[in-house]
Length: 192
Image 1 (cartoon, rainbow, N blue to C red):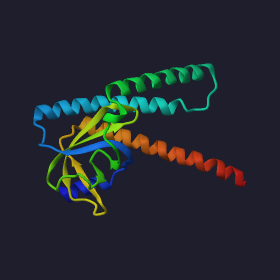
Image 2: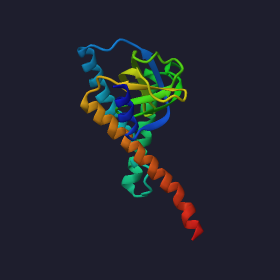
Image 3: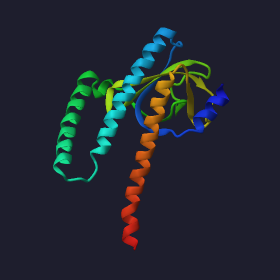
Image 4: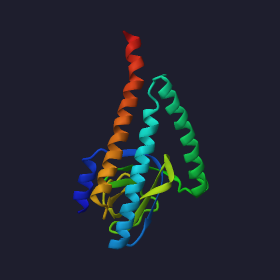
């Protein structure tokens, strides 16, 4: 599975950023615990997707009254989310940020603190949009890159959770491409 897992991971679009995350050695969850983890993950993915989509939609440059009202409500919701995040999980309680690349198949992260290959792990990934609700990703430490980083192949994620991760990663990738194009556009128009 190790080579197949790495190939499946490498062949897919992945989200690369610095996340608040921690990876700990842990026994593989039993079926009941895995069902609870998958249910929580499905809820986290819905919340994170909704918060991220809402934030990106409100950046459109439409000055109509409806857009202004949505922007005002968005600002209020951002303040409420920040208050909830700080109450539920203060900044000091978050794990440190680490450079991480992930998709529905696995994650690549620094070797520091990773268990040896073959060990079961739990990767907890906190998104800035909703820091208090981590995505809990059970997996196995597998062979992968040899550049100071390690590979975790996810194990036991339900299809709906895998699909949710794929959609989230794809939307983030699409957003990054759109932002890169938008930043390149002004430079292109000034030349002509």
